[in-house]
Image 1 (spheres, rainbow, N blue to C red):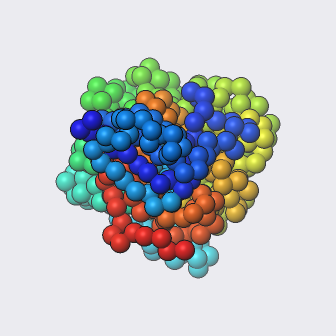
Image 2: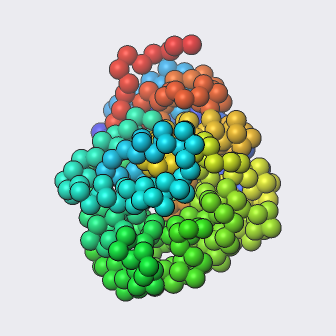
Length: 425
Ligand code: NIG
């Protein structure tokens, strides 16, 4: 038909075909690889996926209005980056150098840096400026092969500033072709509440959460539950109010210390519990039983050099579905490149390249509540895919720190094509 697109010459087509739920255990190794594949798209939706010779026998494929030649390269679902703080108003590169010289993340935070520094930057920024920053950042995600991205608030802290951030996320999303999942994040107490924590929690539960729900400014709700940030009791109160207002729940858990936050998230049926650098193996059976996704963020462990990587292997072996995300933010993980996260997952956490791909696509999609819509290339799903200029998908993490993405199709539209893209190796 008029709006049909045919993608041909996919040297390796990674379909991620599988059950209608997050992948766990050995399922994470099955990426549904088709050699010499093709994809037929109609009106933004995937119609057919398969081997090229068989697919080209169908008349609908032969009549496709647009043909995209993948030139024998690797084609996979667009990455779903399920944990980012991608809206911020200024870099924190001074803290980066201070840490290199021996300062610590927590000491910098206590001295008014860290999240509080980003809150000062947000306060000084206009909404229009934030919208512009976000649309630029979304373009960066796209050029690296990401087609759906979760974006958290959490640098506003004061309710008016959180609302400003969330309105900017909504407006930026409307101007971008990417799918954006907005999350209200309660990240730290606003400065004037430093010795009045309970009053801040009440302000959030009684005013901010209902207002964000009423204005439909977020789909998910998240809390930084960790040592030095929100306690388990505070987090329970916040999550109860959020659940009552209808938000899906995500949780920052076990990043700085073991707190029990992962168990709490799992008990409250969170979509995902994120970070888990200090997760105990004793907590894994509960996560498996509840199907809670463990979203691992190795970018922050790398950038902060903060110690052991999250326990990816024990999680996969325990049957917990694992997702990977960039955690793009100016403090702990300044990268929008999911390909680099795959490299860290493989080299530092011993995930296989196949497991890393599943974690960055289909499991990321379930981690933002969109697993039925995106994250795999199957008939009926949204046609979101990326072309990588490699001959074997394992070369995506192998050639690390590079951008292999040469084309992106979103809802059946070619949104990005790298100039002069052709075989290099
Ligand atoms: O994921 N853990 C909480 N938040 C971010 C850091 C935020 C910041 O330093 O700006 C993280 O590491």
